[in-house]
Image (cartoon, rainbow, N blue to C red; front, side, top):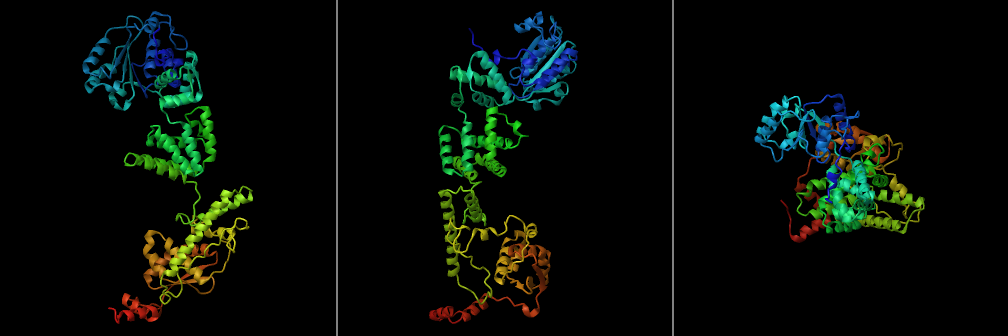
Length: 600
């Protein structure tokens, strides 16, 4: 017995058996029932969605001598029998991909002059019509516009944009939709049941996704897999036969990323690449997986997932673990990798760095990383919450202890460097960069987390820097006292945070020492009118910042111009050096020892 592939064996013979095109088939059936037929139709859409099949069914129905009330062919008249036996002279099919010349079209146009012998219409189906040459289109135009009354043209194409507007305007246009994954799975189940083939639904889901919306492609892949599996289609065998990256890999990568487990991710990437998969394929597949996870977070968008019901539940479960910011940042990182992948000379390293970056999205910041000033606070807050709920593990204690030790070492290193620098007490009456106190040793058993007076409560009392000063000012409800040193420290910090467009103003404000006149009033003495006007523009913002940082809602900032006697002339480098030499005995002795008496 001759073997027939499933795409041909199970090709639909009626409108009702066409999968996924119910709106179009209903329109065609209604036009047959009412007798309102156009002289030209244009069927467009992606490959394998039923364009040519619907054209054949339509041509068969309109020539049926006894159509049913539902608009289907009777299958018993001479016209239907001739069509089923492929001997009908009323239906002509032309493949425009191989017959795209003007001569072939002229020959076809001559056939339109001969009336049908059986039935009412002669139907000309031109497949891949966009492949016709310009001369062939021009020869076709006149007949297409005014064909004989017993002639109907059905044009099919996958690229409608390549057709001439004059061709499109003469046709009724039917846009065929891509097959959805559930529709393909249901059709494959029907074929498997008729063929007596066992299957797993997850295996059919992989085949449906591989088909990319085309039923013909799905049936071709189904035949290939059925031959490989010998009548028992399983998920593992389908993955092996089609060389498809297992969806389980993507689920594992996301789970490991949420755990910040970089090393296991690297092992998983190595295993994937060792199987012959491309790094770009891994990144694109992971991006598509994350998109599905994001859609599964909301019940309104979960229906957008083109997956089986079982896989949809898995996406919902992982969506509950992933926060929306994590998904947004991960998708942006993967998209950037996809953009840079082709131009990269070391593609594997690019993929590994991308996945490392994804794995670090949810990782708590550690002291000394230079990314967030309150990263240590976040770490201790997490530890305290776990401690209160009784979920503290030895690993948590170790992590926090190591972080505290690193913070202590970093601060002590800064203190050593500051001590090594020459102190210029004469030039700076007030120290502009007070040394931060070193955190005490971490003690997990103490109530605050630290021994020696440095508690978690004190650490958590600072305002979150991500909130703007203007909004944060509304939350200040204290009237804490502050010293001149604290005021100067926050003043310098404020100048360092000023935006780039204010860098000139920031440098000049750094040379100014604000003073406390009548607590909590702060006076800022400005040397010239231009500086005064520039500072007056941002006086309110300066005042809001100091209120937040010094935790005093009654602070008021007053600007004034300096008197003439308060303005000191700028010193030249030589004058500055001579002044230091007079005040520093060690420097003067050094020059005398070297025999240097004057410096010019």
